[in-house]
Length: 299
Image (tube, rainbow, N blue to C red; front, side):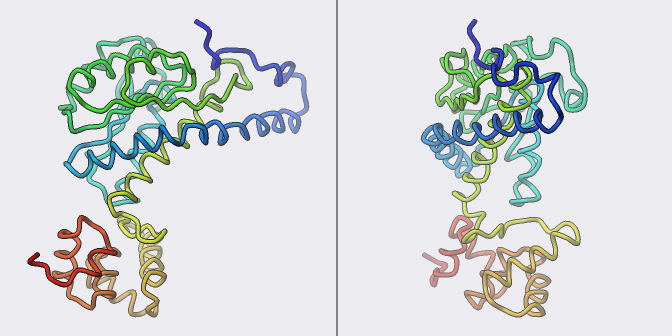
């Protein structure tokens, strides 16, 4: 099969004989191509985000599934959602071929087991409300393809994220996201440009979806979970920037709101109690703008 991710890169020929700075320049020049490759896929990424938002609104889940580097990137993105957006740990999930041991160790042969992809989604209790993103650099990983075929059979929305235009995953998923980054600096080492492209796309999928369900106010990360000193300080600064109040007042509201910046902002802007702020947000689907503007909670 003619896979561009496995081709030799003419620009890095003889790289093993070049000075370190020259090696880094070659890598840097190739990395510059990644953002442009992702840019070409923005319409398809937007389609996926729309489906993810729809899923979240009916209590569906975003599930990433992959092998090797691709699986690890999915787990990374999923693990960042709870502290960043206060999501439930089961709202965004990362699955890797070979299980969690494969996060730090190579599990030989795990990616070749198509039945295991199906089984891992079965264990998650996959439903048609979920969105499953299959992540595979070459687009032909059996483990991921098996998962996608099962997800299709269940009626879930399937998204294929790969870096080869004519790959198998593009033929079996509802939405295909295919940033073509070209041959790697080190032939076949898809943790490089392909991995970078995948990470950029995953950032977009999760972040834009969270924006779509009201977890961002203006450009502020208002739904973060301030679980340590650094995040507590960040939460306070977010409240200050969103409302213009003084630092001491921000500290007081953060305490009253039970360390929930989003609730604190509604309390301040709508001049209401903690209980009413929570009710407003629930009524308005988490949107601070709507919660502030809402007058009659009985409507």
